[in-house]
Each structure stands twice: as structure tokens, then as C-alpha cells.
Length: 393
Image (cartoon, rainbow, N blue to C red; front, top):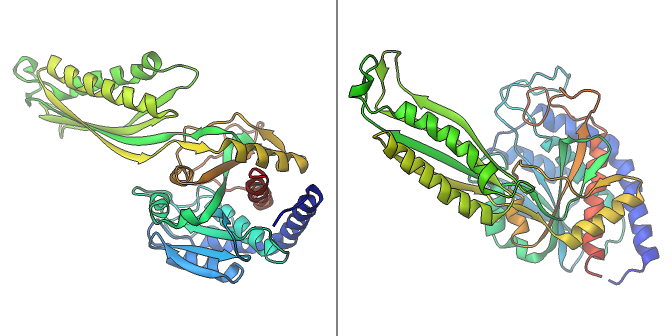
């Protein structure tokens, strides 16, 4: 279907009006999903609740507990993705509709799901130039990720593009991040094991101390990012766990550390992993110890399609939205797997408050985006849908 500029403007207006008409029901759905969350890998109930709320369409199971719901006619579809899972966190928001157990939607996935339903219900009421697939993805919060499974399923071959939107406290409220190119970091989990010779803490000359060696490694590894990578790009290595010993007067025989390594360019990843291996190996040898570095790849760099980003940003600006086309985050999202298989676009929807820099952020037990964000996420998905059409023109 070939659409004129006037046709596209009319479609945009109809989708936005339909979205507004669905907001009341979407807020109710958001509260219901928020109060009854499911942890990664156990999202069947959430998936079925979403299918019941979505327009009738062809439903397939994907990634075990996810769903792939297609509607809106024939032709190459455009995917709209939302995540199903919550986190193992005890909620402390205090709202009436808060989760009562030890699982919480602390990353905004409840908002994303409600917005996706609202957009799809608005879309089904009007003639669509391109079908829509609602991608209900499980296991975004764990590895191996649901996003990788969706990408490996082959279903993305049937999509012309796939769009996602994510609430982002690092951006001010009212600002949308639509950045072409690398946008979210690729991430690996690093695991360092140092083995030495344990013994009495009072006789350090008789031992080969793996704790001292590991501490030196941690300090040295932090310096790699500042001395091996272009500072205008950056990398992040955060050592988040250190384990050694059982008591105060015994030098242990081994020490272990784990952490998160993040990059915006694959070339930096290759170079720094080689440098990390050298630091770990040679620091251990200098202390009379041995060490191994294991790396478990988690998510690749999330790379937004540049044409898609530009087109979607244009549609957002037509609504009066403030668009930031340079925002990048060292968070990671398994939507990156989609972007390596088809045209993909992640739009960030700002929730930050400049007047309250201590406002809870993602994965906090007090993180609670306002219901008004459902409309903002919905507008972002609509802009992505229209951008996928016009970026091909």
C-alpha cells in the first residue's frame, strides 16, 4: 500500500486519538500486571493475560513462555516488542496495587506491556498499511536471554523492522532518546579465579597470597578503560563480587571476583579482553599465584538503525516531543539481538526529575513510573511503526 504524506498524517492522527481512547483500560491493565508479576522463565500467566487483552490474531509461542501475536492483514509486518518478566525484588512503593510477594516490576515492563496493548487496540480499529506483530518477550532480565531465543527462532525474518520503547530515568521527563547507531552497551560477565598457597596470616612469607594478587588485579583492570580506549567512546568494567577466606587469621588458598564488562564497540571488546587476560595472568605470576579469566558473553551492542531512528524522531517531533538524538546508556538490553537480525529501534522515554536527583531508578524497590508514561511509551511505539514505513519510502 502506497501512502501519500496526507495519508500518513491522517494515520498518525488516528493512531494517537485511538491511543488516548485506550488509556483508561491500559492503566487498569498496568495496575493488574504490576500487582501480579512473574519472574523470568515463569511468565506464562502474564503472556496469556496479554493475549486476552490484545486484538484477535495469529498466536504463536516463542522463547518458551513468550508469545508472537500477528494481526492487521497481509504483507511484511512491523514488530512492537514488550518484555514480560519482573525482578526478584520485594516492592517498597507503598501503592495500593503494589506486588505483595518477593517479585516486582522494577524496570518498567508493566508500563511497556500496557502501552503495547493500547497501541495495538487503537491500530486494529483502522485500516493498517502494514500488519503488526506484538512480540511478547520473556526473560529480558536473565541470561541466557529471551531476546536471543526470539532472534534465533527465525521469526524475525518475517519482520521488516522491530520497535521497542523503554522508560529511562537517566533522561528528564518529557524527553525521548532516539539515537542512531550504538545506543546500549554490549555486556559480558567476567569471572576471575586466583589460586595461591594458603596458610597462617602471621607468616605471610610462607604463603602465596591470592587475595593480595586479586586486589592488585581489580585496581589494574580499572585502568584499562582509561588507557586503552578512546575516552569519547568509553567502556565500563565493574567488579561487583569478591569472595575469599573463611576467618581472619588464615590466608586462603584461592580468591575469586566477578563483574560486568561493557562496551559500545566490538573492536574495544576484542582488545580489552586480550588486555584483561594479560593483566590477570601476569599479576598472578608476579605474586607467585596462578589465575584464570573466564568470560561469558551476555548481550551484544544495541545498534539502532540510523534511517529508522531519523524517521521515528521526525514523527515524535510532530507531536511536540523533545527528542535527544545523542543519548547512550551503558545499560544492556537483549533487544540488541533483534537489531543484529533486522532493522531495529529502541526509543528511550525519559522519567527523570531534575528537581529530585535521588529519585529511585531502574531496579530499585521504589521505582514506580507514573501511569502517564503509558501514553508516552505508546507514542514512541507509534512513531517507530510509522518510521518503519516512511524510512523505506
